[in-house]
Length: 262
Image 1 (tube, rainbow, N blue to C red):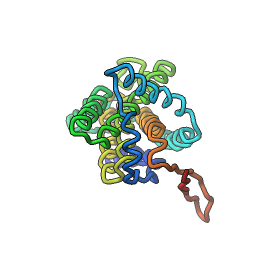
Image 2: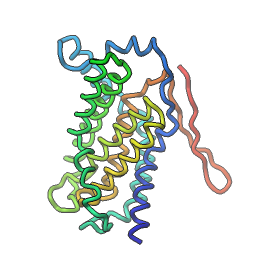
Image 3: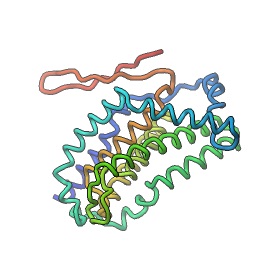
Image 4: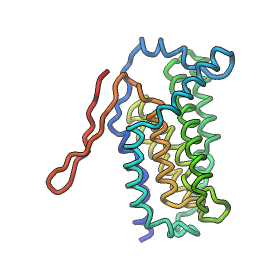
C-alpha cells in the first residue's frame, strides 16, 4: 500500500507537466537569438540592469493570464487527487527513506536553482553561446517570478507544516523552483532535456514530503505555480503559442493543443 501511495504521488507530480507537454522547442532562429542578445542582461551597468528588470516587471504583469488560469486549473485537479494523502504525509506516513531524498532538499532550493542559472548565464556570456545565456536568463526570471508568488501565498494562507516547524507550508517553494527550471529547459531544448528535468522536479517534491516539510497538496500546487511562471517567462518562445481545449468523447474526454502562429 505504501508503494502505491509513493507511485501515485510520483504520477501526480509528473502529470503537472501536462500543460507544458505540447510545447515544442524553439526552432533554430539565428535572427531571433541575435536580436534577443541585448535582452540577455543582468545587473552590471545601468543599461543592462534596466533591460533585465524591465523583463522581470513584464513577467509579473503577464503572469495573470488565461494560460496561467488553465495551468492552475489542471494543478488544482491534481491537488484534489493528492488531498487524501495529506494526513498520511504527517510524520513521514509514506515511509519514504529520508536519506534517499536528502539531496532534493538542497538542489531544489531557490538558492541552488538560481545559482546554477546564474552560472549558466555567465558561462554562456564567456563562451559567446547566446542560447545558453538566454536559457540562464529565463531560468532566473522564472525563479524570481515563481518565488515571489509562492512566498506571497505562504504568508497569506499560513498553513502549518507537517513537522509543525512554522506556518509556511502551502505551497512548496522547492517544488516551484524545480518545476520552473524544468519547464524553461523543456521550452528551450525540448523533451530530451524536459523528461529528466521534470523527473528531477518530482524527486524534489517527494523529498519535501519525505522530510515531513510539506503535505502532498503543497508540492502539487508549488509545482503548478512553477510551471505557470516558466510558461509566462517563455511566452513568446519560438514565435508561436498553444491554445488548450477539452473535447468530450464517448467514455471520457480528450485534451487538445492547437498551435497558433503569429
